[in-house]
Length: 281
Image (cartoon, rainbow, N blue to C red; front, top):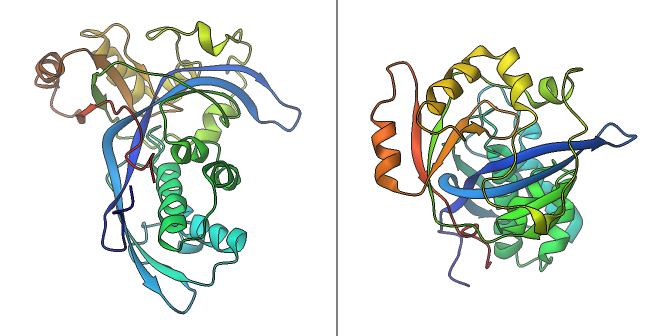
């Protein structure tokens, strides 16, 4: 797939965690996880313009986030350093995914930067090499580089790809920003769920160990989850929150439930993707 160019819009899709178990903790404090990542068609969009001065410029900074700290800028500079590339880029980010929502928005943006600029700059790094770079930016970055719906283990970098059925999702976004460290740092977080072999996981199995902590600390998460479970008892939180979701086998059923959403709650419908849109780049 070679038709992606400097004029393209590059997607950075959201992910849902179809389950998320905390199975242990390393000596360095990192949590050991098991989860299945599913990409959905809700996405941020990025554009890149070439620069001859070697600078990385974010044309659309996020309020409150210094450009030098932004994951997109950091990802581009990391690729420059790793590849020895002297080219630069101006990055435009059309942000659709909420921050602190558990959808992986910032990580997805960073991964799209790595994949896109590796292609546009012709730096020639392999996917595994880009995954390793991504891991230095954040635990969720490698899966977006990897580009497949997958059973992930470790701190989120060991993958066993899975085929998932077509599905529609109703995603609700409580109006809170849930900081990931507040959830993983909670003393009450369950950290000893028994590990399972990837081949033993079945679609629909599992739960989210972070959900109880997030619901206790952020009542809006619990409120949205309780409403959604009236119609979909299997509904759960994605990542460390705040978004919650339910899966439906038919779009019409998801639309029916969405139409009943109370005033004051917000959300959207999304389709599950068979793979990341940039998986074949």
